[in-house]
Amino acid sequence: MAALHLLTPAGFKAGAAAAGIKSGRQPDVALLLCDVTATAAALFTSNKVCAAPVKIGRQCVAGGKLRGIVVNSGNANACTGKQGERDALAMCRLAAKVAGCEARLILPSSTGIIGQTLPMEKVRRGIERAGRSLGESAKHAAGFADAIMTTDTRRKSAAVRCKIGRESMTLAGVCKGSGMIGPRLIAAGRHATMLAYLTTDAKIAPPLLRRCLLAAAEQSFNAVTVDDHTSTNDTVAILASGFGAAVESPRAVKVFAAALDAVCQDLARQIAADGEGATKMVRINVHQAKSERDAKMIARAIANSPLVKCAMHGNDPNWGRIVSAAGMCLAAFDPDKCTLQLQGTAVFRGGQPVQFNTAAISRALAAKEVVVDLRCGLGAASATVWTCDLSKDYVTINAEYHT
Image (cartoon, rainbow, N blue to C red; front, side):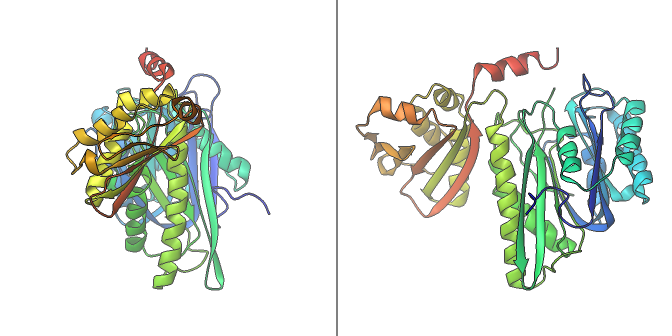
């Protein structure tokens, strides 16, 4: 059986082109189109400084219907005033011409340098070329994934297929994100960005699709951080063609939500693993917190601590940095009641360190995935946040990005 990809769900095509927005001959403009008007939902950055395509995108998806998405990389079209909004609308019109639909049914996205207006002649040529290259193969899906990247070092994709009654449904997605990652996505209504695009052939009503996407994002994209810098352009969008199984019954909703959770969490983990300069992904699990809010707050405090992230880079089992990061946030926390494990080995319990083999744990921390487990002993709430280590390369990338 062929591997699943973004265009496996029935009814979707994609195209990409190198328009010269990014240096070199890299693809930097892409289209994702549905053969029919799709049910759609999207979430956007909560940053008060939001890009022009975010402002326009909120309007486009408000009705719960879209025909497609147009994306450019290399230029964020952020902090570009009214001209930026006119350019985002022009992208919609150009893509709509390819799709044969109204401009309001196209969602625009951009990622890249902040504060520069789009080179619209390049964008126009790119959209036209992407339109001529439309297809539904794995190659076309890969081209779309390549075209949305900025500082990413690899494509990021995930997909699942499942049964709902006697019918099947496929759900797939791609994303980009490596730096400027600290999404705080909310419902509609080389700077890096978190962008994710999902397709499904499920038949589902817009309000239900929005609820499922918001719930899935909270446990995935909103639970990943590289530098905790919420981008001006963060966008997650899903299009449902309706050619597959219907999502109506409580059981069908449960199956769909589980599939969406699986794909979104897979993509979120890939973002953490590809953090700028990262050598490893770090999963922070907080258990037995007083409340879910506290669990998330503690996990994020640990994940965002530069001291913790540097220790992870050096394979240093520095439990003091982790416990103190948990204690400095506003969540309920009592060190005398907590237990901390690194890679499955206890290093701190009941307010004091536990004897452990430092060299052995240091070797374990050299793995590509590190797991930090903190049990608070205050309740039953849990949360997970994915992050990465902090290396010299992160500083280099971000010191030299603009200049």
